Amino acid sequence: MNATAPQRSLIIIGAGIAGLSAGVYAQMNGYHTRIYEMHNQAGGLCTAWKRKGYTVDGCIHWLVGSSPQDAFYPLWEEVGLIQGRQFIYQEELMRYASRGGREFIFYTDLDRLEAHLLELAPEDAALIRTFIADTRRMMHMKNAPGEPPELRTLFDNLKGMAEMLPLMGVFRRWGGMDLSGFAKKFANPFLREVFGNILYPNFSLMALMVVMVWLHKKAAGYPLGGSLPMAQAVESRFRQLGGEIHYNARVKKILVENDQAVGVLLENGQEERADDIISAADGHATLFEMLDGRYVDDSLAAFYRSAPLFPPIMYIGMGVNRRMDDVPHSVSGTMLALDQPITVAGQQVDHLDVHVFNFDPSLAPPGKTVMTVLFPTSYEYWKERYAEKERYDAEKQEAALAVVRALESRFAGLERDVEMIDVATPVTFERYTGNWKASWEGWMITPQTMMKRLPKRLPRLKNFWMIGQWVQPGGGLPTGVVHGRQIVQILCRRDGKPFTTSRP
Ligand SMILES: Cc1cc2nc3c(=O)[nH]c(=O)nc-3n(C[C@H](O)[C@H](O)[C@H](O)COP(=O)(O)OP(=O)(O)OC[C@H]3O[C@@H](n4cnc5c(N)ncnc54)[C@H](O)[C@@H]3O)c2cc1C
Image (cartoon, rainbow, N blue to C red; front, side, top):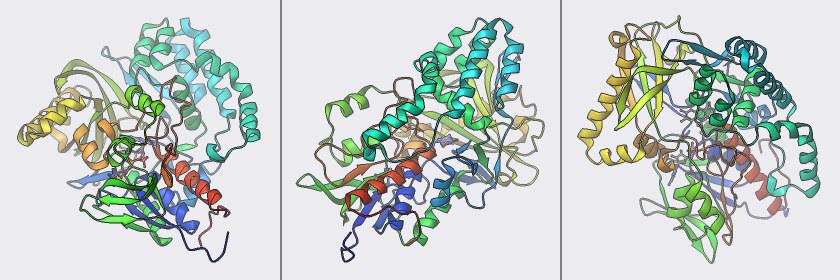
């Protein structure tokens, strides 16, 4: 690079983990970076909120790469997220509790899980043994993020394929299967019920196996203190490196001249210009609102028309005036089949995903506990209700009461002890993060989308890039940091300078 070349400027839309990470790497590599964020704080979906002395965490269950042995760990170090954080590793991923009171424990340790499955369903021994053996095989899968796909050579790709060869059998057996298909393979009715209900029916089984591997290896822990301090740590690294961040600054349009992105128009009418623009915000809004759909080719349009999303959810936080030490610690809590289904937003709800944060005392005042409950709901229903604010608020309240009442049989005395209830609807997710149809993790990771990567560049539009959960099905925090790093590697390559991860 020419040492006298002027510093190139960069605008990033969105201060979620993807946008913040891109900002950190960009500053490390000499790009003058400004982030515009519509909310009044950083984090996007990686967030938490305070209510009456309790902290309702809106995100983290497990952070992939929490162990120094994992390939993602150095990335978290580079963006400053992991330093000084204490992780805990649970023995249980989750439980499933049926109507009749039967429980399945999804252990994180594969040996324990296999023994438990065999005990519950000896008639499915062959299936169980193959499934667990294949999950163990996946432990040897390379998960290093490596070079951006856009910069990989033919040799890199061939090497990657060769590394996958030992896993071909695993891919053949399970690659095309989702959880509903897996559930149907069991002869045992209880395990059919379990795998049909623990996650989403169209969730890729292999994606679940990857999670099982990380948890088994203790490479994906829960960070004490939860989500927001992690986002704040990356924000602070970005600022220390000289990056600028502007809050309450919603981007309305991306300014384009001669098929080249040149800046952004903020909602307040202000125009900001830069050499490159990266959108780390919602994909649909970026493509169809900020760019008015002008740079969407047929294949991208088809994907946006047909690919499934993580469904919108109700997310209810509760402050409970007692310790709940009798509830086993768990990564994801319990999927509880309700004896009496409840009706919320005109839909019958027969399962609640209940998470008791008794393992993180920092989230509640001494002697008290935070619980969260989530379940899928209708985006359209809540969107319509939001137009009549009083009715919307009243229905939120009703939903919360119905949930607390429904939980009383499992947590006796809950109605009495709940002293804080906070209800987030799909409208809340949309208002605070802008995510399309309130999807809380972008595109659903199904057998069809699992290997899919959407383009980070758009045909015919120069100096514009997209990163984050809308570019890679399954989303998650690791996607954010990987994309943030990769996009700056791409910029450095284009600008003829070496990519660095040291502070300037
Ligand atoms: C309940 C729950 C549990 C989860 N559990 C985990 C977990 O255990 N592990 C894990 O890895 N992931 C988890 N996730 C997923 C993870 O939170 C997300 O995938 C990740 O945070 C997405 O990051 P992002 O930067 O791509 O997008 P976002 O976080 O959505 O960031 C986008 C940012 O852009 C901003 N923005 C949008 N539009 C505009 C605009 N027009 N102008 C300016 N700014 C704009 C938004 O306000 C937001 O800050 C969970 C999510 C939820 C909701």
